[in-house]
Amino acid sequence: MAQQSSSAKPMPMLKDELDIVIPTIRNLDFLEMWRPFFEQYHLIIVQDGDPSKTIKVPEGFDYELYNRNDINRILGPKASCISFKDSACRCFGYLVSKKKYIYTIDDDCFVAKDPSGKDINVIEQHIKSLLTPSTPNFFNTLYDPYRDGADFVRGYPFSMREGCKTAVSHGLWLNIPDYDAPTQLVKPLERNSRYVDAVMTIPKGTLFSMCGMNLAFDRELIGPAMYFGLMGHGQPIGGYDDMWAGWCAKVICDHMGWGVKTGLPYVYHKKASNRFENLKREYNGIFWQEEAIPFFESVTLPKECTSVQQCYLELAKLVKEKLGKVDPYFIKLADGMVTWSEAWDELNTTP
Ligand SMILES: O=c1ccn([C@@H]2O[C@H](COP(=O)(O)OP(=O)(O)O[C@H]3O[C@@H](CO)[C@H](O)[C@H]3O)[C@@H](O)[C@H]2O)c(=O)[nH]1
Ligand SMILES: [Mn+2]
Image (cartoon, rainbow, N blue to C red; front, side):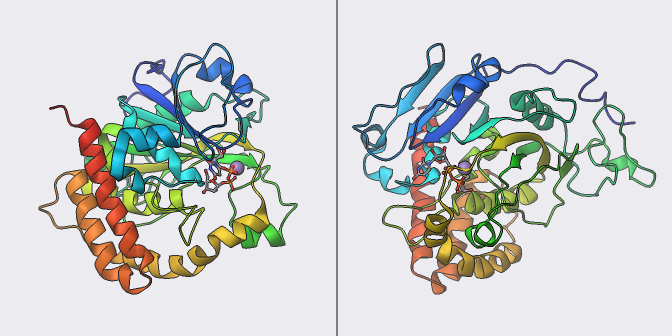
């Protein structure tokens, strides 16, 4: 019998242990719709683009806001690892947060409704997913065994039923799905109306496409690996920020014995970006991912790597060595990973 189901006992709100990180190059009007669910939490707003632009935050929210001038002031030369003019800038929010958990959301994502018509509280579901164990080592065909009304199926080893720590909770999207630019171009009218009432652990040894628009993670566990890379202005690639972080984080979670879950909760995504612009920024990524995925699948981290940062620095070394041959960009990216790790230490190691 799985531990008491996650919905049997009320989930803690974690309002003093969770920050909401929002990257924005537009405005924050969408917060009005999220007010019932977000108002109790501290927001970290990462303002991208022109720092002289004033971003209006709706009344009543507790927040800190950082623009490019702040990032440069706080990080100095290390600011070079934080992207400009790409949603990748959001990882600066992970760096400066002091909380155990992070939830990050895009400013074109709104409250979705479940099949009963009830507004979905994304924070509550992500907390449930993060606070209940994962099952990366043996797939439970009835999905989340810790959920009310579910359990481990016959044949599931009892020695494995305590599960593992959960490091990442990856939510999904109704309306505009997270398709790449080529798919968006050929299927401009496709909308996702399928609400799948499930959370599942992504099996160990399997990579996945981590989308940053409705994502939560245990910052104390996997935060040092959640670098969203060098994307956007001055870089030959964009729109692969979350993908890169997801591949790195999944390899490290597998090594550390932690789980990554995907599924509920849903947001309602009203894509604000332009699919033609997206094709330009994603273009190299479409080719490079065919090299990057086999690389990540081939990675075996040494057993001496017992901390996420040791894993991350080892990964950066391998990226430079193996992917640097694909394109010099990956040498720069590997250096960015090291700078990120140094910045993490600088801002997060108590003297
Ligand atoms: O230069 C920029 C562009 C955007 N942002 C902010 O980042 C998020 C996502 O922007 P948007 O919704 O326009 O992007 P999408 O094409 O829908 O999704 C991409 O973003 C990532 C998912 O989060 C992933 O790379 C793609 O799926 C919004 O909050 C923008 O305001 C920015 O800060 N700088
Ligand atoms: Mn979007």
